[in-house]
Amino acid sequence: MKALVVLALAALALVAFPASATAHPLGNFTINHHHAITVHPDRVELVSVIDLAEIPTLQEQPARQSDYADRECDTVRSSLEVTVDGTRTTVALRSASIEFPAGEAGLATTRFTCWLTAPAQLSAPASVSVRDTYRPNRVGWHEMTATGDGIALIAPPVPATSSSDELRAYPDDLLANPLDVRTVDLRVEPGTSAASGTIAAQGGSTFIGTATRAFTDLAGKQDLTPLIGILAVLLSLLLGASHAALPGHGKTVIAAYLAGRDGTARDAVVVGATVTLTHTLGVLLLGLTISATSALAGESLLRMLGVASGVLVTAIGAFLLRSALQRQPVAVGHGHGHGHGHGHGHGHRVGRGGLIGMGVAGGLVPSPSALVVLLGAIALGRTWFGVLLVLGYGLGMATTLTAVGLLLVRLRDRLAAVERFRDRFIALPAITAGLVLVVGLGLTARALFE
Image 1: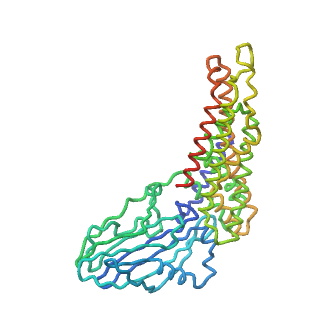
Image 2: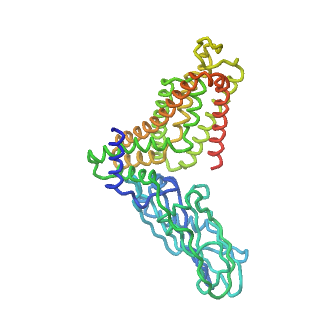
Image 3: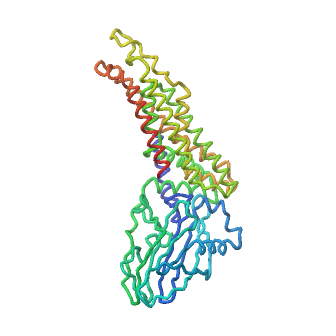
């Protein structure tokens, strides 16, 4: 009944408070680029749009800098390389503008537009190349479009119109493999050509994505009423639980660990509590660090934390495997005359430290949505509310992970009680230790190369 009430309230929140249309599906850390290229007989014109998501906007605080658009557009100008037949031409800045669309959790985003031009003599067939080197190490969407005015583009490799409506609406069907176009080489000649088509249309959004945007919108409401506060807390629990249910959040590792070490229900609770504490502290520390400095690239720190989490899991898996291979084969029985022994010694090969290590690994990488909610609450002067929502998010994660552990412990005990399965449990510690090791290596590789 309680679960039904929570789901009903969450559904009410999704209906009553629609999600923001300005969300950044690639992440709240991103800096996104769009360059519209128009080739004329005597020049190449560019309209460059740069979209800063919520966290870089919070760090750089462009609204407090009257010359921000001019300075950044000048940096964009110097970072654009335009060449005609291999010879670089000078890019000049004509004008700049800036606006601050509303983002998630009451935070603003930044959108500045630069109008640029570069001279070119294109009275004969030629090649025109444009390269974008503005903030090359920041994660984000990178797209280019190209058209001709009095100039024909021969089989252009980029479309004539933007698939993201110039960074206003990112197409869902491309988010798994976002555009990363930073260089375009065009073959041109005098004349006219038909415009090339756009990239695929937008798809539908997922329930979790919609719920996440509703959650951040609730947290960023200017008028915090008791109803909005309760709905936001309930959604934080629901989203934390859903977040942990997605692939890659430690369920397999924690479940295998508990099953392979003869874990108990108490062990599962310890892991869940450690996940909550680690995730909550991680979000709070990262939020404070981001608020204090503009030099931190948040996505780089998240990648480092992902690597640390994978290395920790790998180390625990290696230790488990070594211990399992060194010990004598002992079945998981209770010594009722079946010749299997008592089988209690293998359950403490790593002990409480290993359990805590698993919990730390499960909660080490902070959820970006929880971080954005915290930063939004701080910006609105409601730090206590942001901390409460982050704690709720962590509790939701811990609930899912603890439930997975409890289910595996119960299933293992039931299988161990069946005579025909007992002998198979002799090799279980080595198998599960190997699984932990493999998953740890996979998590490390994904964090390094994603």
